[in-house]
Amino acid sequence: MLNLGRNASFAASPARLEQDDEALPGGMSGPLAQGREFVWSNRDFARVQALIYKRAGISLHDGKHAMVYSRLSRRLRETGHESFVSYLDWLESINDGPEWQEFVNALTTNLTSFFREQHHFDILAQHLRSHKPGGNGWKVWCSAASTGEEPYSILMTAVESLGASASFQLMASDIDSRVLDTASRGIYRAESLKGVSTERLHRFFLRGRSANSGMVRVKPELRRMVDFLNVNLIAGDWPFRETFDIVFCRNVMIYFDAPTQRRVLERIHQVMRPGGLLFVGHAENFSDSRDLFALKGKTVYERQ
Image (cartoon, rainbow, N blue to C red):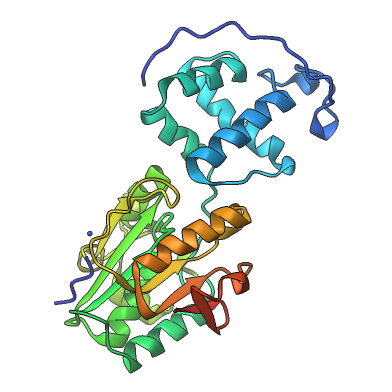
């Protein structure tokens, strides 16, 4: 059989009506400009930039003011804080805990779809059919699983290429705990599977009925073939004891600056077998790291 692996309450500080000397983006000229619910300043944004960079390696450029304000405003409401100053002071004081995960979740973007960048799955299928794994069965890591569309696409490709009895272990991780919950459930709106063939729909999905009409669920036998886990690519020790034949790290590095990209690539290199394939996003290029990975095809690299 295919073995594809698995509020606290606070006393809110009064709002500080501080105003930076520098005008805010989008025409804002003061802390309560344009009727915003919370005080929002360049100083607040700079603090958020520093915190998310330290915590997750994500580099937020200055054009993200509106996005950050909108997403973190929800955290202020849910935690009872009346200003960003109060919220960020509290966040820094607790060092670790559930709210740090919520902070990261709020600022990460999860845009994905089934068989996104189809050429990658064509290359994957060909590689699986024409090569042998480095050890006892294929070991694959999807490092940005998001809501599950990518890892399930990998699994469908593996089953079609190798058969249901092949040894194929998939680890699927993400820094966002909420999207991993969605991925592990494997329930999607039918309209989100427009790029999935009728044959695959019948083979790998169950259609919802009655109250669940318009929804589909990944079949249990496929869901049991993947292990979902929370992994921060820039922090701590990765929970992997064996090396991988294939790694998908697509549309992740675009959020990192060059030094962080290099550090992550070095860590990925350490957990891959020589000759293994690294799949990356269409806007990602690692020609400056030829000592680690050599370009093999369109956005596909080979581990050196």
